[in-house]
Amino acid sequence: MLRRDDALKALAAYYTDGIAVGAYQGIFDWMQIRPHPLNYLCTGAMGQASSHGLGIALGAPNEKVVVLDGDGSLLMNLGSLFTIGHAAPGNLVHFVMHNRTYEVNGEFPILDSKILQFEELARIAGYRHSFAFGDIADFKPRIKHILELEGPVFVNLHVKPGESYPRDYVTIHSSESRSVFRKALHARLFGNQQ
Amino acid sequence: MTANISATLKGPSIISALNDAGVQTVVALPDIVTCSGLLWPLREDPNVRLIPVCKEDEGVSICAGLSYCNQRSVLLIQHTGFLDSINAIRAIAVEYQLPIVMLVGLQGMESDGRDPLESDRLGIRIVQPICEAMKLTTYLVDDDVSVGKLSARIEQAYELSQPVVFLISQHPSAD
Image (cartoon, rainbow over all chains, first blue to last red):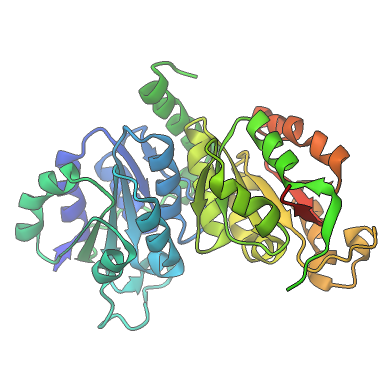
């Protein structure tokens, strides 16, 4: 099984400068592994990362948008798979960190984890491409190709925790984080610092 | 189901107000109050991109994402979905101070001219007090006069980066 931080480090090596929308432990790890003003940290409510990602993907169709979701989070917003499949943004790549637990909420197991195949749900929901990986040796050589595909693309990563990264709730809910992201996004989209 | 179509609330006027306010996207879940007079016509409107969602809180987040891209949107939902989405609205719209513009149909609202606070239905009576507790600005949209103020109020929400809730108490006509 993949270590989550190994998977994210491998992704960060290819996805160096794009928009990343994340939830909970995945984004806590990511903001340490790839600190960047285009990290969208403030998703507000559990389950909403994929929907924020869709909004940004629709609003910035010429920018790649990567969503770093959690399995418990996605279970809370499964309908978003169908919303994304229907809206079909070509620039959206949706990763889910499938660790089979509510990791930041006491590591209680998610339900029915043995039969859950998010990648099949995504395929049925209308994602153009859908993958699952459980080994870094399989995942790493495919990342560049995955990022180049027309979306929506779904990638289910069967992960276990890696290093223990700080759970910085203050930063992910801060007005400063939102302001930093907004300025960076506007500079990217409009060429100025609005 | 037979609806009481309002004689003074016209769907095309509401759509014109959305166009005037620069709304490019409507994120929606079908609501019995606004479906025939607003949602179906919006589906045919070339000026508006319609994004159907499976659950209302998705729409709060989609509108938030669009707002970061300087794109204007509204969330068209029923009051039951509004109540179901309170946590997302609390965090994303209110605490993050984002211009989430909600058009909320009051399903089951009486058509005798009474205020929603006086409705026989608990689910309708509690909407405005909940908004007040969350410091959410609300406006009643029930006639041409209130529709006439809609565009400016949406503009204001975006200028101030603040959420706003428009309560649609009667079924708008489709023409």
